[in-house]
Structure formats: C-alpha cells, structure tokens
Image 1 (tube, helix red, strand yellow):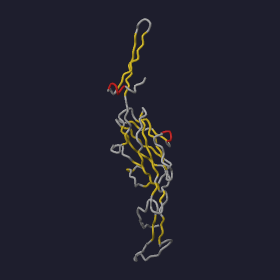
Image 2 (cartoon, one colour):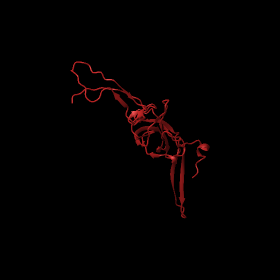
Image 3 (cartoon, one colour):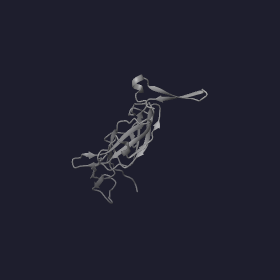
Image 4 (cartoon, helix red, strand yellow):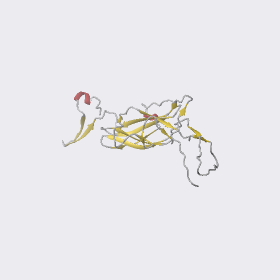
Length: 212
C-alpha cells in the first residue's frame, strides 16, 4: 500500500486501511488497520535528569581522561513516535579516518535501548578504544565515538560525536629517597623528586607514613 502522498493530500497524521471481502452469496466482512505516521528522527538529549549522559559512570566532558579500553556509556534519545529500534556506534581510534555514519551497515556494532515514555535510554559497554596520542607540542589526538539512533520505521538521527581520551600508562616517579633511611625521630626528613605524565598529566602527589 503506497501512502507516500497521504499526508500531503489530506493533512491527516494517520490513515486507516480498510480490508473488505464479499462472498458469492453477498455476505460481507471487513477489518480496519490504523496506520500511524512517524517522520521525525530520534533526537539526542542530555537534559533528561534520570538518564544523564555518562561515560565510565561519570558526567561526560570532552576533556575527560579514561584508563580502560572498554567503557560503560549511558545516554538518552527523545522519541515520541514508533520508538528507537537500534543505536549504532562507530569508534574511530587515533590515526583512523572518520567513518561514514550515514551508512549504518559500516558501524562497528549496535545495541537495543530501553523504551520509556517519549524516550529511549541505554547503558552499554563499548570497547576497542586505544591510547590517545600526544605530539611534541602537546596536541592530543583522541578516540572518537559516534552514535546514530534509528527508529522502528527507519528514521535515522544525526550522528553524535564524542572525544574519548585514553591513558593506560602510570606517571613516572623519581625520588631522592629509596631503600632505607635512618632518623632520630626528631629531625625532619626531606623528600624531593619529580613526577611526569606525557598524556593525561599528573593529577596529584601524595606521601604517606606508616609502620611496617
């Protein structure tokens, strides 16, 4: 049944298909099928307070750093029509070319979100992120995560792109103190050294004293 011109000619949002049959004796029967029109694409939202956009259980920001190649991702789409069928994802690792997100057959994978009232939300683990590269000028080349939602009738959202920085190496640590140090329990002990990290950077330095 071709309904491509229905909305344009009638202005209605729905259509009813009536299937009728009559036998040779003149007995008639019919049934109606309601056709719902959905021409609106799913819309990514970060304003839903119950299903916030999280990566690794933390609110996402483009400058965040992560230390695992597989990360839990939570997100939400607004979809008041037929409902989101699948969310497709692409992971572009540092040095790779950008994917063609208009072709969902090229996606790295997909997952099924949970349907809510006017929304579709998800929590899923995505893998294969690689260590971000940092050049001599400090320029970071991150991973990029692309998400595209497709509803039950094939309407596809625009691609959402997120930069994922991955650092799996521990900071280097050099200290003037190693092995054993004697003290009379009165004089101060001076500890000096350096810490460095050429990726995410050193976040903190701490010194603890405890008995063996």
